[in-house]
Amino acid sequence: MPLSTQSQADDEQYVLVASLDNARNLSNLLKAITFKDHAIFSATPNGLKVTVEESKCLQANAFIQAEIFQEFTIREDSVGFQVNLTVLLDCLSIFGGSTVPGVSTALRMCYRGYGYPLTLFLEEGGVVTVCKINTQEPEEPVDFEFCSTNVTNKVILQSESLKEAFSELDMTSEVLQITMSPSQPYFRLSTFGNSGNAHYDYPKDSDMMELFRCDKTQTNRYKMSLLKPSTKALALSCKVSVRTDSRGFLSLQYLVRNDDGQICFVEYFCCPDEEVEEE
Image (cartoon, rainbow, N blue to C red; front, side, top):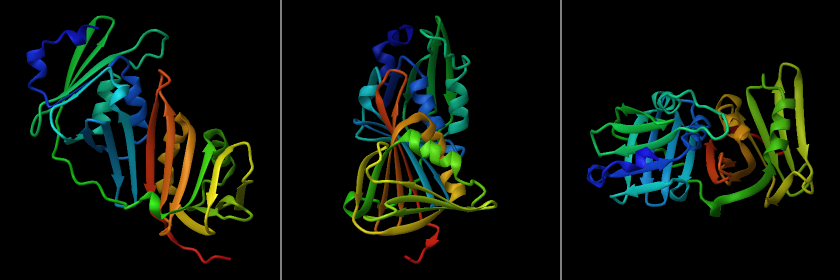
């Protein structure tokens, strides 16, 4: 790959260098969290985390492990910057985002540090394009304090079954109500839209349910406008983990296989809309 022939001296000026033989493995994940213009990039030796937020009510994170990259070099304990996500995605698809088998755009992403642009070297069919995107100092992402010790209920579903539910529920509803319970209805999604109330129930022994662990009955409502961006991640994923904690905060963790069959994760955190009295 021509991009790998850059001299070592060039590399030493960068605090972060990440290369992919197929840029779609990054762009597809970024599309799954694109609902605001700006994204916070946080790199550690473990890999790359990209965060997008909406008014402290919704946060999306895409995780790309270091092993996914053909090259991942970081010269500091952590590297962080903020970029315009729309511009970045436009650059990543500069060759048209070809889906022709055997044709892919190679990517080499380099960052020199605070105040410097994010430099992308993109190569397809021997043609190399260089893009430089201005970076800003990253804002501190909101800490939703969602920790596994406070998780009260958790289910893991095949993504197909959740896609089916979303296609049947009334999306004119302002909220999605999620009920999780050790007893019936076990796991229920409810909407309250123009055409009336609708419920979608999952038996806990359903083939679509890989794990069902509910400690107590919880009913919470979440603004549909906040959940809609997560359907982009759902469309890409093969499994989804739905968790709620003792405060009613929601975590949707999507397992996504990239074009090369490698596993990445996209996670959405959403705060509850209002308290719902348990029936």
